Image 1 (spheres, one colour):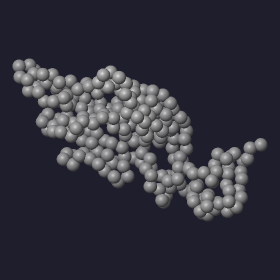
Image 2 (cartoon, rainbow over the protein chains, first blue to last red; image 1 turned 90 degrees about the horizontal axis):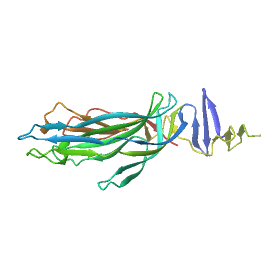
Image 3 (tube, rainbow over the protein chains, first blue to last red; image 1 turned 135 degrees about the horizontal axis):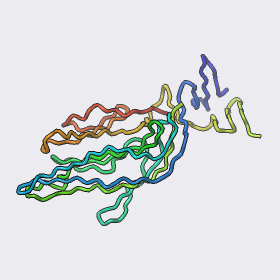
Length: 171
Length: 88
């Protein structure tokens, strides 16, 4: 028989491979979500003033975008998304398709002293809401240290996410 | 009339084939589970705004299922992604 019962536990097998075990969790997809969300431009500025005042406006963003209402006990998001942004010529470019589980790092600066910047995005199912989290940290002096009153502005362009997601839980 | 339950010496199907032992399902197993499904972020990012600009850093720590990547020259915290280990 492909199934067995023992001590309140039910196990179903297929050729010896366990397919179902009542002691385990099974992923239950509760809802599907398809849509588009676009973040906003982020700008950091920096100026080391000689004759003018200093400017130091880094970006430190931790923002949730609520995409939809979901089952309150759902805590798993799987699926795919595509990230697109305008390039330096103003042309929309996509960075391709990605798996929606975990954090997607859209951009990270070079690891040169003392500069660093990162833009990362995460889908999550949280307390009845399907959320895209945007986490951006960057300094204005990413564009280069300038000791002569020049104001440097670093811009992270808005990112458009086209997503196809499934939300569920292990039960 | 749809099939409610079918059991033979080699087959198990239930609810008109919604569950079929010949298929594979993503399981959060007690043993033999190795494929992590994260619940949310897998990278933790932190900026310390109190430091002087020459010493400023943004810490980045990736930690999933015991695999960690982080900057070693600064304190990157102790974040570990919440995951469920699964198998098919």
